[in-house]
Each structure stands twice: as structure tokens, then as C-alpha cells.
Image (cartoon, rainbow, N blue to C red; front, top):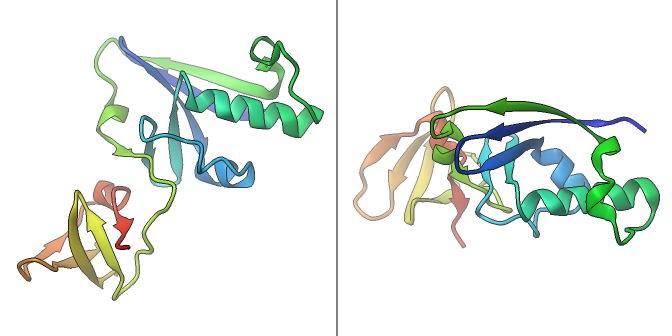
Length: 152
């Protein structure tokens, strides 16, 4: 069994465990993760209370085939955890809230960002979008890409 390497990031009020989004997909967990977790690029920061427990349970079942009554006290052997703590507010709090469905970032795609609708015009270098409301054109910051969701 290969241990899953994760980092626990903590600030004075909360903590999060960083995992690759691909792992959550492999374990079929995307529907279980709440918007209390955050995402940045391909990394998801699972909030410590409920969302991280979903990961623990899924890994435990994958490795042992069942989930015993005392599962929460016996999960440590499956993870290699590095700890990082700050006495200030963690920058994770400013990342995009977790979304199970991510927008396709391609020319012509209709996307939403912070409740407003846009069409993607350009993807080379920075992503350029055009507002569906007023026709204004904007260049998105890298961090805004994580907050994009598909228009439904």
C-alpha cells in the first residue's frame, strides 16, 4: 500500500487538507465535497470536519474493503501528512469555493463567474471573456479560472 501524501494547512480558526482533484475523481467523491472546501488549480483543500472525513472513509474502504465502527481512529496508516500552520488568516480562505463541475476553458464556451455570464473569447496566455450583459471584455486572473462554472 502506497501512502497518500497530503499537507494539512491550519490557521487559528480552521484547517484544510490538500489533495489532488484527480484523487477525488478516482474515489468518486466530487458529489460529496461541500463548498466549505476550496480549490486552486488541480488542488482541492478539504475542510477538516466533514469533507476530509469523506476522503478518509473512501480510502479506508478502497484499502480494506469495509468500514469498521472505529474507522475514524484507524485511518492514519493510509496517509503521509505534512503539517503547515500560520498564526494569521490562511490564504486558502481567498481561494475559489470547491465546485464539483468545472467549466471547460475553451474559446466559445459560456461560463459564469461570481454570478455573471460570459463567453470565452481567447485562451492563449490569459483567458479573455466578454460579458453577456454589457459586452465588456475582461482578462481574467489565474485565480479567477478556478471560480468559473459552466452556464447551464
